Length: 296
Image (cartoon, rainbow, N blue to C red; front, side):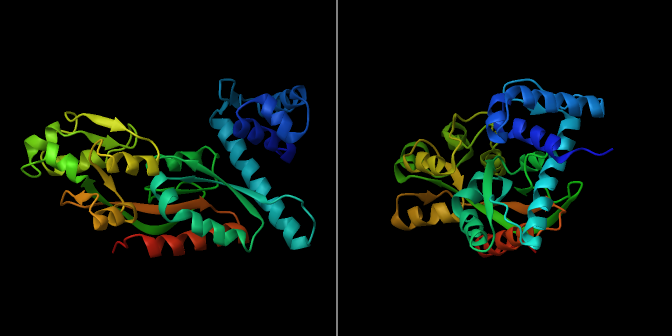
């Protein structure tokens, strides 16, 4: 069954813009025309494609159409480039990324791609354990993920592993860990999690025999703000060396000791023959391998 590109594009616009009205502005048509296109495609396929919630979200069938829309866009862009046609628009590439990669090494990799290819990026920030979901739903063309098993239709490139060091300010240590790191002290000392899915501090506590449910915790869901909260002494937390070492060298933070933890990272992207996507993968892998620990 043939799905017209403009109908698939309409589904993608509604999901991306999160409403019919915003999708209409993006497509330069009326909201009623957006609704008519969606109804026509749902009638053609005999399935509901979108849940009319706020924001709008795709059903399982809608996710399939969304992936098709992304593929249409990439293939159409590459064909126009190959034929020397004027498109007037750069290829838009949504990428699911984790906060620490975004804060430390990813942006220089993407900037390098923009010098040679007409692309724009939309970075969808999510925990590395959940970024793969955005690939599966069609919201992203590529993802930095902790999932090394290939998602259907995607290729996988190992990037290395993000290291994390447990750190706190000298004042925090003097107040909460005056006799050193111990099970009893850690059970009472406040810690900082990125969000409620962040489990790396819990893993470090478990390594010290501490039940991670007990200690008080703050939640600071932005990488630079998370590091700032640790530097302010609100709690202890795990930071990548790129964020931790300068402060340790200045004496404003101290390492709490072993174990340092690592989170393996992988690049997954859809299997689409595209020079731009290939260049993105190469740039990301090169910058990641220069910044991250390599695992044997």
